[in-house]
Amino acid sequence: MPQSYERVFNFSAGPGVLPVEVMEQARDDMLNWQGSGMGVMEMSHRGKWFRGIAERAESDLRELMSIPAGYRILFLQGGASQQFSLVPMNLMRGGETATYAVTGAWGKKAVSAAKMVADVSTAFDGAETKYDRTPDLASLDRPTNESYFHLTLNETIQGVDYLSDPEIEGTVVCDMSSNIISRKMDVSKYDLIYAGAQKNCGPAGVTIVILKDELLERMNTDLPPMFSYREQVESGYMHNTPPCWAIYICGLVYRHWLDHGGIEAVEKRNETKASVLYSAIDGSDGFYRGHAVKQSRSRMNVPFVLTDADLTDGFLAEAADHGFVEMKGHRSVGGCRASIYNAFPPEGVDALTAFMADFRQRHG
Ligand code: PMP
Image (tube, rainbow, N blue to C red; front, top):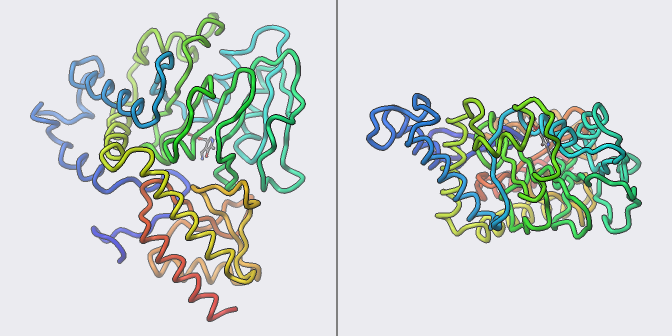
């Protein structure tokens, strides 16, 4: 087996691989967190210990992402999917239209959820080219009565990423579920960011929301409290019991990356891993083919096919025998997908590309 604890190389798209050191720390703290005599799962969410844990997670995320003053951090529940609805519920005002750029399956889902409560204009839909690229945002036709503009920074299924922050006017809302904390980002380019934690940040069950204070002033007030960002801000996301354990693990993950060189080091590590994998695909004389066009290639999710599709099942089976697991492509795209989130080890990418070259030699 490739790693300690007989761990496999886990290419899961989410929930995804987490730093081993974080899980070791959580294991050591499980029954008695820092001498408190109890585990984090057993603590009152309003007690001083958990408040400290949550405040630390917030401030470490702020440092890791260089989140400027004037932005709030919330740890909510319901997943990124719930934000698909909360965003329009909170932000839409009468007579306004929300604009969406759809670069893949998740953007599409965001649009259908928004349409239940909002007037939606789709300024870009990449369906025609099978969601293999991001648009030039500046050239999009947008309504004059726009409430907000929504984009999915990295599409997890199609492996399509903008690779830069949006340089556009208006209120920008961004689904960062699959590439948050994967590279340096300029948070000031966004008004509201949301991300399910279960890829780069921690376990499933908590959703990170980063929102600009100014946005709160224009938010609807007549919402059920659990659906209201204003209420979540006012109650310090403690309107009800927050996902304490998941927040605690996210905090350990943020601290882990801060202790390992911060976001610059994370970005470098991710760039290197992605470039090794894409080079193996590009250098295979068409044996393997990536999905996204080069300028939109995700560094987190790398979907690819074997040109001879009949070889796919054999490839995946042999890969699993070598300890490369969760590599089957999403059912909507087929083929294979290697998700190489922050915690995925570089040596796993090296091992995979060696295996890919060997497989090609035997079957090419
Ligand atoms: N957006 C993106 C980009 C995703 O990858 C996912 C989950 N894979 C979601 C939204 C939905 O997230 P959740 O399961 O937390 O609702």
